[in-house]
Amino acid sequence: MRKRIIGRVDVVDFAQLGLYNIDVKIDTGAYTSAIHCSQIIEEHGTLRCIFNSAVHQNFGKTEIVFDTYTHTNVKSSNGYAENRYKVKSEVIFFGKTYKINLTLSTRDDMKFPVLIGRQFLKRKFLVDVDLENVSYLTCQHEYSYSF
Image (cartoon, rainbow, N blue to C red; front, side):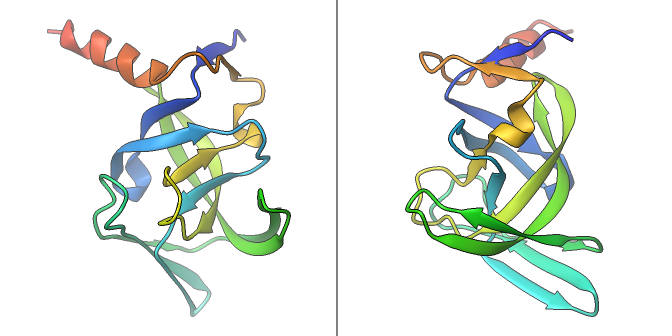
């Protein structure tokens, strides 16, 4: 399988979560991927997540209930370990849907609502830090000519 080249940032869709045109940062320094979640409610063996943000573009109020989820320890960039919920979802790069594990975190104070980490990137992508929005621009170009 040939790896595709992506840049340091991109715009992707999380269709299962009802989130489209979401800005993501490709972070080879992070092992896990993380998504902004404004509210998490664990009840009756489910995890009710509200994806909402006044800061991040295209994060309207979307509510998703996960029947399966786990916990994982994540060491943040400032060195502190934090126990987070982890869910399975899908993300679309280059028009192709991939499975992805996402930890849930409040990211309103961060520039990007989503970090894409090494666990997802491995065996699929190479990162060229000089590039931006490669997947998004490729798909825009392909769709503009598909009649």
